[in-house]
Each structure stands twice: as C-alpha cells, then as structure tokens.
Image 1 (cartoon, rainbow, N blue to C red):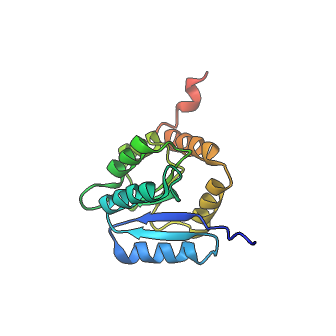
Image 2: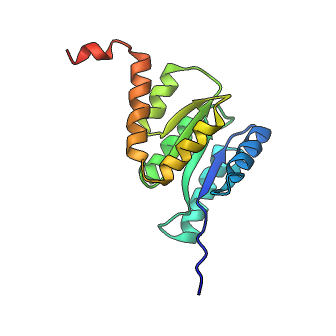
Image 3: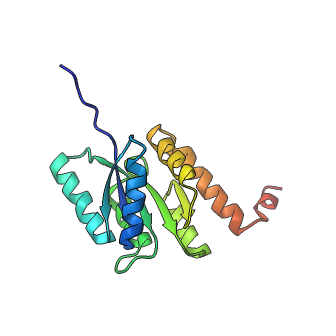
Length: 162
C-alpha cells in the first residue's frame, strides 16, 4: 500500500485580496506547498482553531505568512494570539509590510518571527525562507531576523560588547 505524503499547508493572511491570492498562487506553483488564504486575522484565527479541533494537537498549518497592516485585528495582534497558543517551533510566522516602522519591527521579532519582508519583496528569498523553515532551521532563522532588526535599529550594538 502506497502512502500519499501531504504537502505542508501555508496560511496566507492579508486583507488585500488580489495580493493574498497572487502570493498563495505563487507559493503553490512551487509544487511543494498548499495554501489557505484568509482575508482577515480573525478569519485566520478561526481557521487555526478549526484545524486544531478537526486534527487534534497536530494542526496541519505549520506556517503563517501575514501582513501587518490590516483592517480590524492587525498582524501584530494576530501574531500575539498565535504565540498564546503555539510556540515558534509549532507555528512559524513570516511578517509582510509595506510600511517602514522600527517599533513594529521590534514587536514582530519579539514574537519570534522567521522573517520580516517589505513589500514588494524578493519572491525567491521568500521561498528560501519557507524551505528553510520546513527543513528545520526555524531557530537559526528567528535568531538571524532578531539580530538583523536589532543591528539595523542600533548600529552601535557592536560597541556594547567591548
């Protein structure tokens, strides 16, 4: 009997419908992943909860790609809700934004995000990030993102160790 291996499911959360649909299609086009698109953070939370109750502890969603600026619950509030229920090892999160905001970046890395991308972003880099997460590199990715954000915000950090 042959077992069919299910592809990982990535949740794409963005209130810009066309962007979210295009991003999900791009990710699916790799042939390695399935996607679920949610147009609000609340819908995404509902889907995560439904997935948990249908599938028990092992939720099929392992990675969320979320915009930060959304109507209603924003991406950072959504990230906080995710971290209340899932560790960084259980659920990876990649944040997207069109805005340059140091405080939001710091809040995002505080929630153990894998990466923080500015729109428009390099699609190949996004796929590399997704592949890295699914190959078990989440801890290194989180540390690298934190280091990059903190170094960017405080270029004098190198002097702190001296």
